Length: 110
Image 1 (spheres, rainbow, N blue to C red):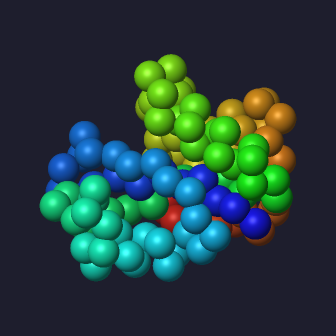
Image 2: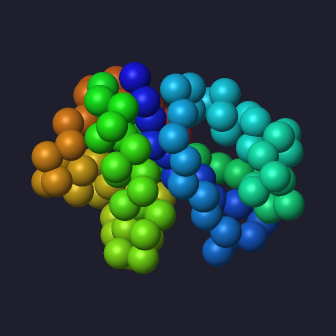
Image 3: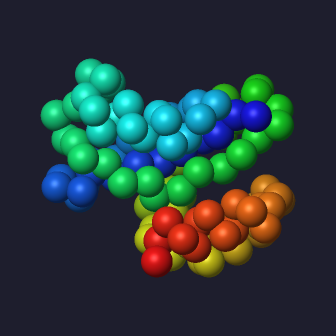
């Protein structure tokens, strides 16, 4: 399983980062411990959202899209600290959200 994730700096709110991983929470710990040169100066980070993919190629395509200009605009409009809105938008796009993921999203943003 591959996860595309979006994180946001807690201290520098305009700083956001999009990545791909097999373990979202381990990767967040790595960002917060300074192991990534791209994110170390803006730590600590909070998880905004993550999307699970069973197809690695689709995950990589989605990550690339989110890093593009239109993808950043999409993320800004749809992946805010509102887990239910985010989940509904993903469902509209045809991305399936499991009940487990919905519960985790709700707990991360409450």
